[in-house]
View 1 (cartoon, rainbow, N blue to C red):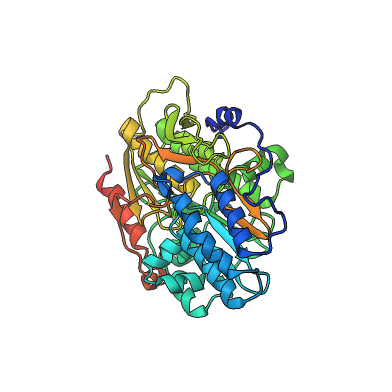
View 2 (tube, helix red, strand yellow):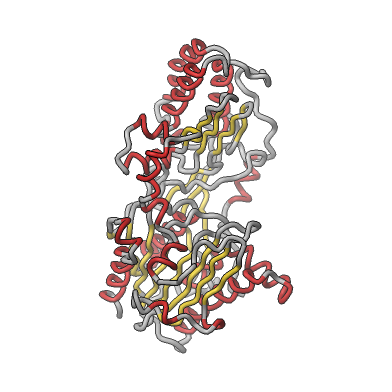
Length: 467
């Protein structure tokens, strides 16, 4: 089988953390009616659950946040008593979280009377880069938000550049998007829509899938080969393992889209295997992670193990060992299993291009680190191309298991990572993102008309390095 175990030091970390009891908030009062009471409990929840204090509070600045903010919250009084006071209190909370490094972080807060904020530091960074002011960024993350602020984001690579859009806009597959409620595949089994690619001239033997079925969410996957034997893989999220499990466990009784995903994953892996066995030519590989929001890390073994001669350490992780803010475990290696325990230790002699953008986050960023590790460990010929990634690579985990993660205060929910992750050389990309080796700017108008500058650079980079 192409699926292999995803090795991670998670089990060892669980032994250190144990099973976590309920969180004790600073005010100990489950009935939160004032902004001061809310802030006190939320601050304590952050103190107990947030993991990136080495990045966000290296000098114990979090204590200063409490000391400076509590008096203001006391002046705002009862939650819901004044729209102006409520909005001011929510703005103060936004000002605290807007620069947090956690790329998964979301603070959802409401006054119960129509003012709701959904504050994400990663959105703040994207909006700031799009030219929005701090006041506009705050307003844009309130519900309802002014429509005048949406266009800058909708026309950025954060929202518009993704697998479904590439399939439709760049590869010319008519109707690739807008297939809600349908399972729709494109590939040789259905007659082979090679003529769709004449406009872009990129790919022969293309195979794609776009799903808008409610139970699995929007999902798209594309595998193809160019005329000069460059393998292209693009997919919208790390959720392939669930489809493959369905296909392998249920056979013909599996959902149609599971069987199609399984076929495409096998097609991708067989191309690499045939090349290794001398049965096929392969000039290079393009891995397109643009717009990929992450998902299930079990996909790493499906996708990247075929490229690895042996087990590869791609990052190091640690967790908090108690509710104490600065109580951490030791760092443990995070590995992806290679194809053989007796591997040669040599990388595939192929140029590889990894395409990323500001929406490449979580498993996409860890995958980018995996390719960086292939380069740094094996000397693999890898180039990262496109835009700087999101900066959210600390995995999410269940709060009940770890001494960190998402927590609730009243009706407010705070989502945060449960594990801190760093690259193998000790660098943290949390809140910063991974800068590409070859940066390529994004132009919305050109992309929507079918010109994919980043993909063209990736192909040019591969072709200039073919052996």
